[in-house]
Amino acid sequence: MALSHTILAVLSQQPYSGYDISKRFEEGVSCFWQASQQQIYRELSKMEGQGWVTYETVPQAGKPDKKIYSITEAGTAELCRWYAEPSEPTPIREDLLVKVLAAPYVPDGLLVQELHRRRQLHSQRLANYQTKECLYGAIPARGDIAHADLPPIEQFRYLTLRRGMRYEQDWIDWIDEVLTFLTTQEPKASG
Image (cartoon, rainbow, N blue to C red; front, top):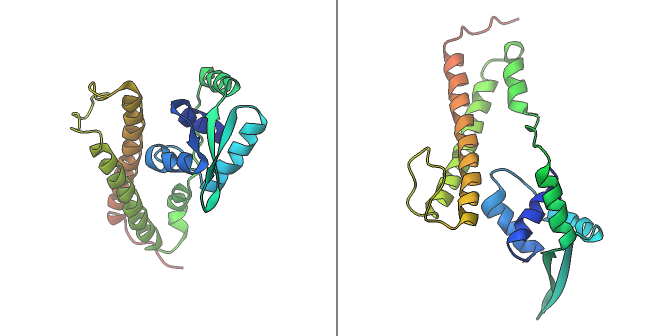
């Protein structure tokens, strides 16, 4: 998937400025797609060249003019073309897994320190997503697909948020598993 398809999906709801698209990424897409504001602006420029988006310039007093981007018919067609393609799992490229693989060959303690640091990062992200989940109202029982009382667009957003939460929880569980394993191991013989 390209960043452009994520932007097209965001713009399908309504027109946004580049800044607003960036905020939408932070608030609702960050659990599965990361992009900086510069990347978004760069991609919007490319997408305009392809005819997938257009913009309206809105003058602002004392500030640079704001561009409000809208998806075009060509952009909608591209989103539909991409949507119809089968999706493949994203290949894993994860430094922490390489560090676990290399653990028998490096000094003790470094991996444990890194695991605790990463666990904290994943716990913070999970807490952030759980805060966002509370915005959806009463939290359904785990295993419920979505809130039946929410409009469909919010139900689909909620589903992506739930996947992000599960992703972070899975990392926490796996790190705990590795930490438990490491506490049962004999220290490595030195030199």
